[in-house]
Image (cartoon, rainbow, N blue to C red):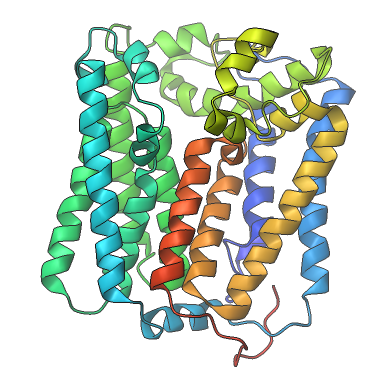
Length: 409
């Protein structure tokens, strides 16, 4: 946190974001406020810090190799975002096409399911079963559409009538997806939009951040109330077996959703007996080919066997541990650290729009790494593919050299 104080420090740089997220999560987990938590073994500590260290080593290696390269400052990147321009007609048409596909696929899935999860008799069960293979990618890929709309609004000058249409589509997509009771995708959209807003505009001011966060928090609260309407107010506090007073029950949800991911991982590290050799790491490929559920049934695979409680999420290194053991925990985060740092360097060196939005996806991966690994999900891979393809046609070519003075990465 102190490293963010210098005036020209990039608070969204890979090492800062990743290290802060993980050390904050570990610090909370070590408080042991819940009786569902357990003391970590030495092997568990080694596994966690091996994953964290591998990522940071990969990040550091690329930063050393590119330390003498010329890069743009953050302010220069923001200024170029307003002057580079985009191919406006193609940009607008792409957003309209993706929006139409979203609404058409949502309508088809609603018809096939017999209604929306929000209005079903069992919302929790309905939301997990909702969706058709193939078409659901265009529904779950809504963060890509929201990000593109946001880019259009901040980068394209004028075009007031078109912007009104896009604002209407933006809130229509946000509102309609709310009926599916899936909060995770909103986090994806907000994280990527925040990153683009930070690097390509001056809109990321405290007032705007507070307004957006308050709106998202309100939507999450409503979603939680709908999904848990049959439970008493302090249900989560009771089932989580918290050690502190009931007066602080409101902290239970945020605390447990952060720390239980790590607790589940350490439980796996201490008890795993065999490995699945890529089933979880390459989940998106198996889902795309239709082999995912067939293999799970044939081999009897289920991540729930590693759970220690009703909390069913794991940090990003879980998949590498279950598939390949400590070798996977060391290797894959290392490659990920190298890749993300290189993409960050490309953004700083070219100030290109395409490089910025790709790094925005990386920002989300790091920000949510304590909770899950989106790189294994077909829906997130689809979001990245849509963003890359659209920007290939609408974004200007990135600069081949940086005129700004050398900046420390």
